[in-house]
Image (cartoon, rainbow, N blue to C red):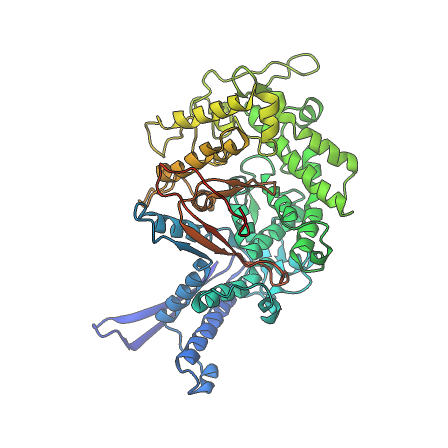
Length: 589
């Protein structure tokens, strides 16, 4: 719903004989009255910023300027937007001076960072009485502020004093202007932790985008986590793909819950100093408890909203049968990963005496996380659908005639083919190599063959590549998996090469739909030469395209003892020289 306010000023002549018309539009997903209130709230905020700027320009000559009523112009709005983006984009400071051979990297990198700010959507409305009204998945009005209080927030992050974070670590070599931008964003962004977010394609974003938010934008990540927990309560199931106040149910599994696991892994669980109310650890633990029971219900109880296909057979026999769905291999490996996430969240909560499910449920979930083995074809070296037409429901594997046909044989796998799912074991790549391959070298050779063959794809990005498909998410972590094998330099080679092959500055410069920042965040990670393993505390090492990058980490104001920035140095000279020579951490090799 929208409300527009039109002001016609006959005296406002631009000088060329044309009168200007200013149109101010307020939006609301709730009602027209709130659209007007949202517009008023936005105008008041911009007005406040404009007054601050006027006061700065007048310096100390006229202090009463602070209370002067200012008529906002289009330029005021434009300047305010410029300030917001300059502040946000200042959080990543890179050095491109030596990249004479890589001129497009500056534009690529900044554009990718920009796109990571475009989603998810802040769905709560600032013009409401408490600044947090939204329609939930139950089609009932809720308050994101109340959600935050119920999910670990003892006080509104926005109301904390500036002094709360000025005692944290600082760096004497920071530029004053740069520091003011960083401090301003850190202060401004705290409010995101108590807002409600929607428009989240969680299957797409759990690999790269969600970890990027957790790494660099903790207040936003916390707001997303609280939103997912609130949605879980509202619809009695963890969300698949929320859009506005509706869960589309698109894609499979509960992979989005990985963010809750990652949040628990960020801090040391037994660090009691971080467990006080309002800190990251306390919030992460509270959210883990809030979603734990529903994740278990979805994994073990039939007819649960957003529940699993062929659940009874999966629980009894360890795989989803092809008789229930032709995508049985996809569902089996996906459910195994989701069971790992459930079991890992529960293991951490158990260690803190917070778990609300039984120890046996936790053990069973961890045991089911190995079910990917039940649909593995040792002859073909990929996962295949399996039949229940056999002894005790254990039938034969039914593999596709052509494993590299994402269009012809798409019915066998969700949005892909056998190669796209051949390494879909994010929870246990060492186990995949040890138990299902003859040797680590065979794993390395097979994975390398997939990437080499992907170079022969003749159709460009719009048509799915039969081998490595950069334009969809199921396989975008695979180039990092060489780190588990005998030749980690293949990760350094291919992560660098893929940024050149699939990303450029043309209008078609990303390898498909950005999927709410999934493609762009992958480029950010690859460009700085690291990538997190979702559901794990490890980072993969690649080969950076950037000489030096400083990332100012946006922490919660309540976590005042956390480091605020990290630095990463030393890109290799060109595309063909990719091998890392030395890695330092905290100034030590």
